[in-house]
Image (cartoon, rainbow, N blue to C red):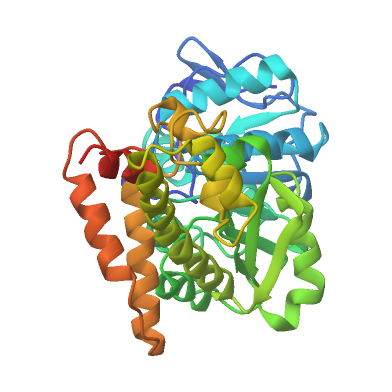
Length: 397
């Protein structure tokens, strides 16, 4: 038996309506897709078919520059017996992802959207059977054991997790699979202010779910190559059981040897902010040093080789050299496209400065580095470029 209804907008309960609402687009007609779009008809699963159980489903929210390749690698690593739910405000990213995994045949993927609005519309249309099914579908989404988010900023995190009508945490507390209650894992992998991470963590009712922060380092190149480093903050009483579970997912998106348990919730974010603080400053320092050499007429390749064999070696000189032509497949060889945007680099440097003020740590280099980034960003030639474009900004002067 199947039930059809005129199409309407679906949104997932874990997503803020204004922030990440999308219209359901035609899904590829792979047999594992449980919702099949036919013209303007939504056909619900036939009798005898089943939704994926919570333990067999992982949700991933946020298909941006980092999230898209992370979700793709996660889908590849999960195995064909697991279903991946994806969601993003960018419908083009959703369609591209669905098409890509369909060609690669890496297992079932569905577009996850908010069932609350759909249920309300169904009730208004006086379709109780459809409304009941949508409620069941919504409850199953809420019951998913693992939700991974890769969100761009604090406002997005607060909306996705805490919005009163569409957030993850205010969602119905009694999923149909009662065995899943209290066992759900919620994981935020973006670089977010520590205060926001702690706000979300403290908002989770006891025994409802476990929230961990697991920010990443490695940038878009690391996300593409599955070589990311993860810095995890987890409640200490649960770390012995939860951290191995966290690693079982993160190893599909990064270096298995680069997944670190840093302490309590929020510690992962602090580690990440401090790392980015240092990376931002060394981006400018390395660019200045190499620009001195180029202006002096030295061979930048040889200079880089010597630096990387000496005390000046750093990640910027060895992994993402700012001088065009010195290294292959880095942003500087692509006119500084496809890397860690200078605006984001400035943002995380400010986050590091704030953390330093909060804990009473004196800093010296952050202010002049921020001033340099701010001046470079005022030039249209460097807006949106990889942060290592500060070399070009310096070299053009």
